[in-house]
Image 1 (tube, one colour):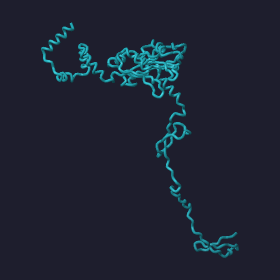
Image 2 (tube, one colour; image 1 turned 180 degrees about the horizontal axis):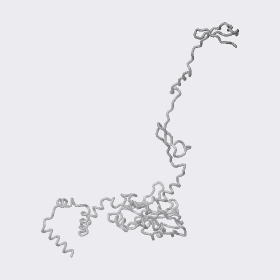
Image 3 (tube, rainbow, N blue to C red; image 1 turned 60 degrees about the horizontal axis):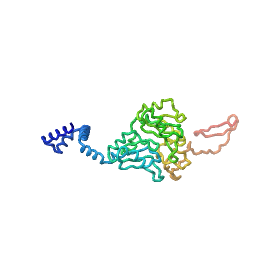
Image 4 (tube, one colour; image 1 turned 120 degrees about the vertical axis):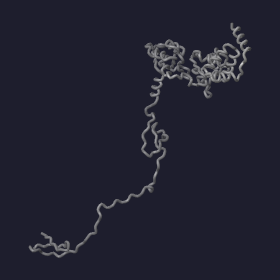
Length: 334
């Protein structure tokens, strides 16, 4: 049946004039992208040569084929990483990233497939358990921003505390998998000793699954009562407890005319207190002298009078004659 269709198409093509490439471009140019994608995918599914050309063009840029893989165990090697992702297609390059100074894994790596469709297959697949850790991948061009960027991430990511030392990532994910599909999760391990730190994180794909895990009264895992709450709330609480009160930066209003606060002084100064960078200095000679205050009452010149002879008044008492206004006046000396 399919051969008959192709034969009819060929006969029709022979009867009609085949449009040139330029004419086809003019026809395709005004079409929206969804229609073009539908048209090319339909042609690619019918003609293998077109499918191969589409595949070749799409895979030309490695940005569409390179994956960023995070959540790796500290002992995961490049060989182990590539073996886990080989099921999706031929790998062109793959490696775990190691710290140059310590020689230890940084907990992430990259996988570059030979074809773009292999990368998409890996992205659609569930997260892989590699060396006891749940490895999660996304396109490398998106970096960490491409991982769980939806606004409801804060409602899907849980903090799991109070874990027993023998609880592995597999046991943790197996226990919480009953509430819903898990997007990402792992026990937190010490980078140097590779031992459990007693807590972990689980991120569900939907908010309802996270709510079920929080609301379930059965919080017993590994013989211990564990803590289950939103990761964001735990992060804020731990941040507050790690900052001593004396080290919380404080700001004080500055008087008008002072320069902006500069760097803190020596270590004897409490953290968070700052002072002006420079303060102008003045010498004593720079200030004007203060004038003496004026006299409170002006002084008048003193008038002296010569002594006068004593006389007796009409009653026989001695008196002193004082000239006032040019007239004689007697003051009795009684």
